[in-house]
Image 1 (cartoon, rainbow, N blue to C red):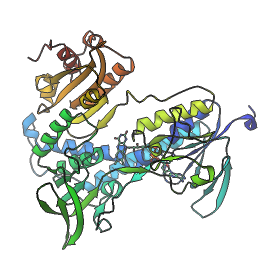
Image 2 (image 1 turned 45 degrees about the vertical axis):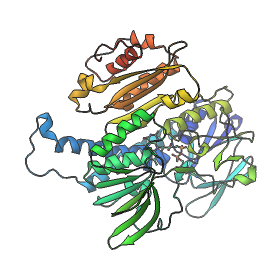
Image 3 (image 1 turned 120 degrees about the vertical axis):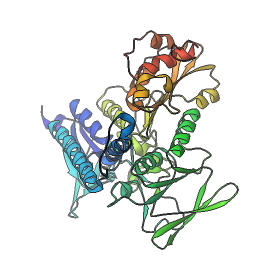
Image 4 (image 1 turned 90 degrees about the vertical axis):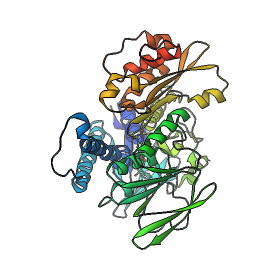
Length: 468
Ligand code: FAD
């Protein structure tokens, strides 16, 4: 084909949204240019999903080894975390995966330009490269995939040394003695698990009356109880008012319902949320409509300006890597003439605490709020052999929510070992609009944690075999 006949698609941002969009557009015959100002793979690969899980993996094994005698392992001598080589392992995995993305883009003929992109007009951006030079790039269509960055609330003292965002927390030179984590959401609880497992004293401060606001309340309450059980201090309905220097430590003042409290620690991690990266793109030049700091898009990932699409965290939908990627595919397909739309009812969401949490579809609170005549089936994992073998019985469960009308599964919530892998079955169930009977009549292998999914479905009908 003549290159000139090809549609020119320009993607801004090479995270899981942008690089997937670029590959899909190239597969469909576009001439694609991808611009990133940082490292390919974006937040997810460099300072998000991947590095957190590398550290959490070692944290989990460290705990297993420390409690080796529970599973018949006797350890002689000291067991120590080698933080420096763990950091090196993390860097190796990141560069391996970044290399993978680089290779995939090259194999698909995507041109990668490293530099900061900003709009000139509807058909042109300019890219400022590291050496200060500037190049214009023309495009028929654009996909904005500029991602998100940590939101740091204006609390007095946040600028002090030792106050970290998630990126800095991943790259510490050494483990602190103690840390205060401000924000008990997904990122906050994962870091709490991580540091606590490595023996760091952790305090979590959450403004809401409970941690993990998007999670089913019954599940989140079980998580909170377990986290406290592992020695993490959690303050809910609590607001950090100031952070001050106090000798070698940081002193955090917390305002609670009835009293005020002061907690001291080496480090403070701010994890109260993230916001879309819209600054620096000169979106004004093309009149892109913003919606509370994020880029407004429809379900086809179109912005208000024809030919300009936006995907991923910058759209403020569900700030998850797999959502960004799926949105990227939708945008690329629409650009290349294939009608495609996002559906948000069956998006799995995972939290890599120990045990893990995973959910898809409605929480019980949402079902109630929507006025759905729903039923709930809960199977406590204390009754599951594999969970017992893996020592994660305490408070863990699978909870299934169905719409009574057709017995359709509308929500699956898992708190237990391997939850983040098991949720795939729940996601497929929702995607296929499966009924509870279809899950019940599906044969599940034994002994697995997954067979508890069937038991939870049976529990909806009050006929679980291994529970009363
Ligand atoms: P990003 O990954 O943020 O990529 C955006 C890219 O755009 C960046 O590379 C940036 O350099 C580039 N860019 C921005 N502006 C410009 C510009 N003007 N010019 C050129 N380039 C530009 N999600 C999960 O699904 N699972 C997890 O386990 C998970 N864990 C996480 C843990 C942490 C600590 C964090 C912070 C996030 C985590 N996330 C997780 C969220 C996930 O990282 C994001 O949802 C995902 O990275 C969003 O992808 P994106 O493509 O929209 O943007």
